Every structure is written in structure tokens, then in C-alpha cells.
Image (tube, rainbow, N blue to C red; front, side, top):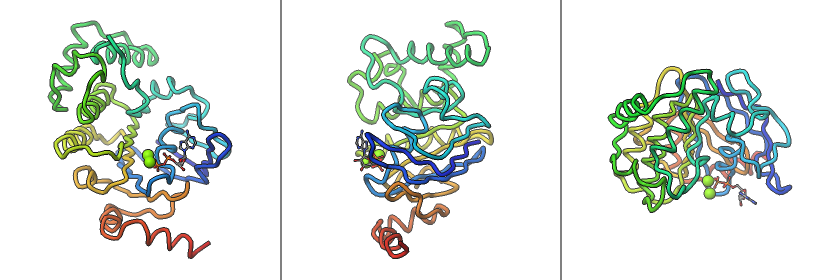
Length: 252
Ligand code: ADP
Ligand code: MG
Ligand code: MG
């Protein structure tokens, strides 16, 4: 579904990603871990198509299409969902209205009829059962005055409604309380199907107590230096990242 080969990317001329290769098949959950500054958010941003990042080498194919040639909007319409690609705050626009616009853009792109108000409402109700979200949150202006936890819940709800083929979750690494963490994890677990894939970017292991990944990759200095099963995440929790840094410097 997603095939990344030897991906290099720079910001303002500084190389950040230095040869990432990764294959994600339908149904798989991949966790990307690594110390601060290793390039995790850069990878997520490059996949979403954010313009500050320049891809200098390598290729990314998504469902057989060259992802790097698509605009961020078309990537979203093709089914790539990155939580933070959506606007942080939109004064005066409720989450509900924002989502209806987003859903209908996706439908238009796929040549489907737009959902009318009634059909959209029933989709919202169905998804509200999956993701525990307060209806009041959805009628408020998008993200305006939302707490960190509410923003995350709202992002997961957006994901549930948009039903992406590939969801990329870049954890803010900032303290989500255990309740918000569980809502995020439950949402991801509920939405997992045989057809879609998930990339969970996290600095900390604790999210992976709730979202069990099929593969764990450690990103360090712009490269994937180690891949393994969920046990690798436990090892990292136990030993930190220093041993990885030593292993890497020992071999170069
Ligand atoms: P991570 O998410 O793993 O903590 P990032 O992808 O955010 O890492 O950052 C990787 C490196 O790129 C860091 O050294 C960071 O300082 C640098 N970086 C990220 N964004 C920018 C930017 N907009 N301009 C310059 N350097 C950046
Ligand atoms: Mg960081
Ligand atoms: Mg980051």
C-alpha cells in the first residue's frame, strides 16, 4: 500500500531524512519511535506533502501512485490522513461543518454524490458510537479553546469519519492524560481493518500499551536504524535510546 524507498528530505538546505525505506501493507500498524529531533515529524510531514520540506532523493508510492507528485489535498483525497495537516483552529466553523466539507470533497474526488445533511448526520452518529466524543465538542468552533486531550479526540473522530486508507498519527509527545490516551488508542484500534494501514509516531512507549503495533522502527538521525516487533518498544522503554546510538556509532 505504501512503499518508501531511500527517501531523503531537507529543510532549508539541511538534510533531515537520510535514506528511509519502509513498506506498509494493508492491515498493518507500524510504530515509528526515536529520540527527539531524529526526524519523525519530518517523515510524517513529507508523507502529507507539507511544502517546507524538499524531497531530494528517493520515492514514495501509495496504492501504486507516485505520492510525491500529488498535492497535499489530493493525498488526503486518495486516503492519506495526517492529523496535524488539518487547521489548528478555525474561528466560527464548527467541527461538524468542517467535517462535512472534508467528507464531501473526498466523495467528489471519488466521483460519489455528496452527502446531504440527513445522511451526514447519521454518519456522524455512527462514528460517535465508535469514538467516545462529546456531541458538544462537535458543535463548537473547530479546536477553538479545545484542551490538548479534546484536540486529540477530535482528530481521531475526524479520522473515523474520513475513513482513511493510511492514517498517520504524530503524537505531540506532550502530556496527554491517560483518559485521552485511551480514547486515541481505542479509536485507532476500532478503525483498524484488513484494508487500511496506520503509522503511529511516538516518542514514548506508553501509547503502544494500548495500540499494539505489528512493527516498531527506530528512527535516529534521519535513518531507520532498527526494526522489530512490539518487543522492541518494550526494550526501548527499559533501556532508553542510548544503546541504539552506541550501536549506530559503533558500526560507522
Ligand atoms: P522529531 O519529530 O523526531 O522530534 P523532527 O522531524 O521534528 O524530529 O526534527 C528533525 C530535525 O529537523 C531536528 O533537528 C529539527 O531541529 C529540524 N527541523 C524540523 N523542522 C525544522 C524547520 N522548519 N526548520 C529547520 N529545522 C527543522
Ligand atoms: Mg520532536
Ligand atoms: Mg516530532
